Length: 297
Image 1 (tube, rainbow, N blue to C red):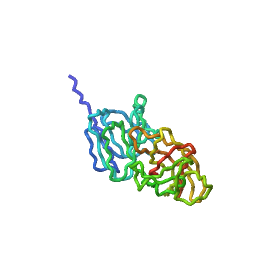
Image 2: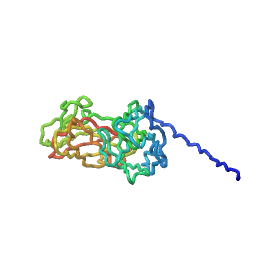
Image 3: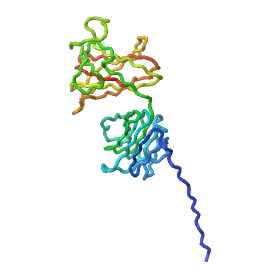
Image 4: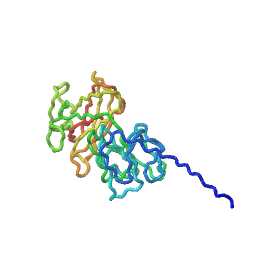
């Protein structure tokens, strides 16, 4: 009889994923793995061969969670604490709506080898050092965490305004009060000396400082009783009183059961380090808009 041949099996070690850099107090249910330095070609799930095929440049090398391929409403979800200022991105099937308190990020791409049958959409939320991320109620296909610069909040009552008035109604403002910015025909007050005609256009002007040249996020916390969108002109003015750009902002009506909402926008183009004024002026037909704060990120 011919001598039996033994097949040689060479075991190729699987390199473990690198640990995350900005997470602590990590509580992971079975099937979840926390890792760092996400890259294309890595497996999206712990139990399938689906891989990342395209990652937005500013998300490459982010911390991330490798997820189970199937999640049920009854499945446990991870919890972790962040050690830095971060933005957490969850990838959901594109047909699903943006979860409450998250922000849609259509300008960023995350593609996998399954994207032809399951296109994804990214949604983001910002966290400060020491805050806990709890994914209860969410079923992300993937989750990425990237460090960002700290954001700064400017209260409306500390801004300069004319043709407007301090208000403490409704409750829920985050500072000492809020500022009601009416149309030009409404009675109002001012905390700045008059510099123009008596028919002064209502304005609210935040003075902000930014440390590096970049495109900045501008998040306006507001409320209104209007059932129609409120159109506002936004001017960005340099410390030399030079108009840098003018944009039109649209503040949507509040959703059901909302008391306050946040309008997320950007500076539109990169601005250099320095001091700037963000000046808001409602159109003449605009109803009352109440502003609480501006977060610059």
